[in-house]
Length: 229
Image 1 (cartoon, one colour):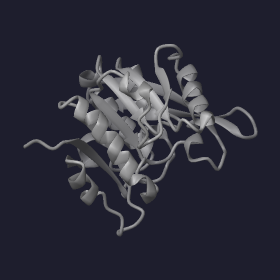
Image 2 (cartoon, rainbow, N blue to C red):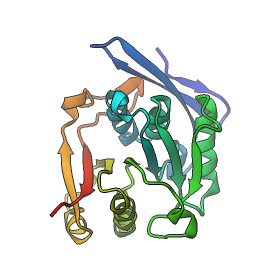
Image 3 (cartoon, helix red, strand yellow):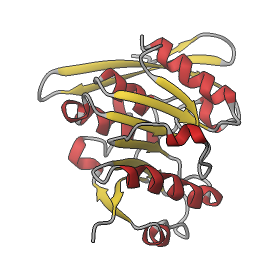
Image 4 (cartoon, rainbow, N blue to C red):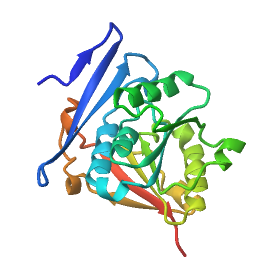
């Protein structure tokens, strides 16, 4: 079965089908993609992994306030919103096309007007950021891509986790180099990291949610929280 629908020469809609065979539940999500050099215009392999985790935690996340950082095509955030969470999707304030992509994903899933959109640049704290509510969950799919951004991402995570001591960040990270590590930054910003094995929620193989994306064997799911004394 094909999970892609061609819309135009540069656009397509990718279909993701999340299932919980043990309970017989199923959810279909449509994500518009643009074939473009910009990172946020198409779905990367980390996104279905994080979205699958959100789906498997759907009862818990229902009614929670959720913030997605660097949302791009917004698959994890769209899944969270479809599960009943109150979601704010964010992407770089200087990249309006990425925010447009977030909006397209909302429209494709009947969520326009039900999900908030906001320009948010990692490491920058505008007055708008301080007016945001406390969030229960922060989603970040493959945000740890360019090591030059790591410090700013941590500063942003610290800000939101510090506002709600019970909040947590779920982030997926693809190993691209053994030289890269965020451990020293976690220590610096007073954050704690828990590794969640992909096998615990059925995301250890390829083709997650019918995505036709590569195997997830190089992807890690981490839960980041504020370090407690």
